[in-house]
Length: 544
Image (cartoon, rainbow, N blue to C red; front, top):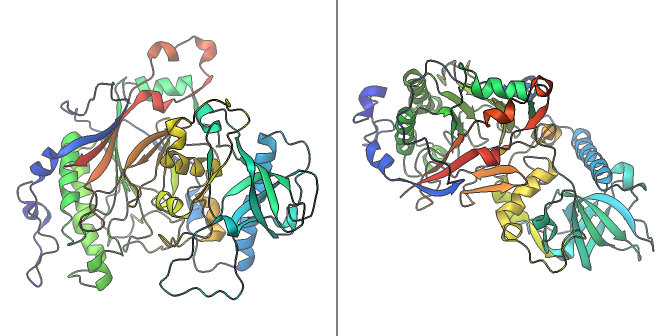
């Protein structure tokens, strides 16, 4: 793309600075790409081969939510709805904990004095000091051991809060059998976290926890052998070839301008690669917002030559349209952000971008999904959220030293994975079964959480094969957490001057061995887990 203005239409510049006329050396950007981190790097890469031009996508897309539920009005919450949502979630996850650990007795109120050990469930929260005033423009204090509280549901403990202390011999038990997790000697607690506890309240003034019981993640999805054969070996689908997916997250323009240079260079690169799927947050492209952030310096100052929708249409929509014309076999998926100034819905959870809005100029073939969402590309379940849950968890988490779980080997040293803070943060999301388990929302991101609709943020059916959790405050990474691939793709453009370089994620997924799927007619309906962590090669791409 030697002269992008001739392709997309030159625009009048005001004050000597053009908002749209871009002269980017896209070849230089593409040449600067390098693999910063790779998972299953022993698998040969298919990204360097000449792409096969397809007339139509080889993949199918399905969502696991009723999209009609997302058309709600925010700022109309009632206090009763908010408290009921918190209460129901606490009771539901409490029952999951009771069944997972085989607790035969009924859960009891931790605020009642008792000399015998009891089982209970509550929500971690911080003590509220009467008369304390919150200074303006000062972030609230983080959770600390002296202010640790356990909040009960109305059914279990009349909604009371009781001070919580971890016994020096306190141990953590997990409902899954991962030896590395069981052998860990630290635990992370954060406001909003729902945990089971075993202990006693001997004095009536505080509950001393002897054990912490962590809720299990949902089971992974499974698909019948017949459907797997259709997805992976049908001639109109993948025909035994690898599925290729690219995922990237905004911001897409540098902090100093609104020229969208990284975005245009990236899209030129994608036009050449022609993946199956592109997720903008191949043959898929997953793109995640923010596409035009309200926190960008020029947007916040109102220093714009055109309406934000015009900027979005000129830079984002026209490049997506051109990609779909030049690579008709690529499916493009857009996921918005609460930072997007072009989106009419500010609260989280957030509906999808409205393709019927002519001001945005999005093509009809683009797939717009809500934020957060779980969707299926063929058989693979992928979860995505543009809320910075990793950055917020890292700020709010209180790490406490504990004894390894009962199932752990006493002499075993904690594995490196168990000590990895990113794996611990990702396990919070999976175990709490929520894309944003923090309550109240962290002051780090000031997420506009609509609590009465927060059920839309939960993982209520399965644990995805892959989680895309973009965070500009956490270094991009790839991890496998309890058989789920968790990815922070980073951002395509620097959110602040001098920040990390451009980064995105590309993935190729091999088909399952044919002989493993064809095992006789009697096994056609048998359900098989997808084992994405075995089949996928994932590259975290950086610019140098």
